[in-house]
Image (cartoon, rainbow, N blue to C red; front, side, top):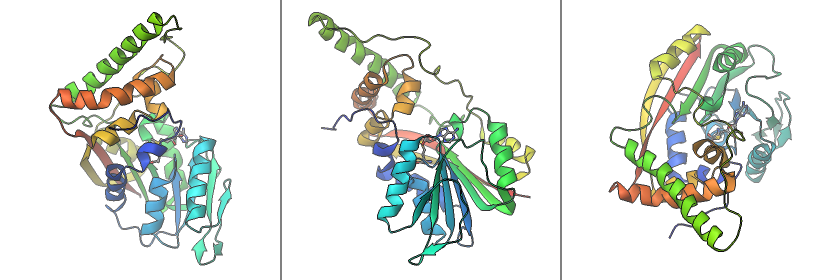
Length: 298
Ligand SMILES: C[S@@+](CC[C@H](N)C(=O)[O-])C[C@H]1O[C@@H](n2cnc3c(N)ncnc32)[C@H](O)[C@@H]1O
């Protein structure tokens, strides 16, 4: 029996799932990073990819940026527990404390960054580029902040190609069953004379407002800002029923997938619908493709 988690404003519950960690590890190890001295991890969330990057480039100073203060707290705590000196804000530091590079985590937008030009050897944005509205501004900012020869990498499971062939039905059933779950819950609430769950249009972002780009479209967009693609990979990740369930606990996704429903109810419904959607299609895993791209600043 998989535990149904309360809605979480962060990615925390899913970010520890072994498939997620392995997928990010696979992405980060596609290019050599051992020489890298200064890293910027955009939309760093709870620090999953930051930790992988630091393990691949020991001694590198990392700045993490996320616009959610809760996630900045969580990523900072994560590294403090690992014995790092962690500071808050946007300072660039060369300090080494107890043999480890000091790290800096700041709360802010990935498209509006206060760092000087040509500061970083490596910039990443993992599992988040698809939610950034102004992708041109983001990529221009990244190009400005990278040193010549510096690396930019991103991965995303929201691109044209992310739904493996033959699995559309499972993802569609997931949403249908989640809506049915709320319908059933409403019947019980109504029978008990309690207020029912209402969908209110226009209160949250519209679902899927951001276009999903293909690998070649991404490559063109990177090229336009002086970033030359050096590696493109599509990784098949097979989520266990538990991972698929826990994805539903992430408020950011629940809000988009079930736009208009109270996010707590959407997260509960998505989690309860994940297993039945999988089993209804005779599947034992939820397969998903992740696009991984690395580019070099020319
Ligand atoms: C799915 S999480 C990914 C977190 C982390 N990079 C990882 O791979 O585990 C997406 C993150 O993007 C952040 N985010 C979304 N839009 C952002 C923006 N415009 N600027 C900074 N962070 C943003 C969210 O707060 C969230 O932490």
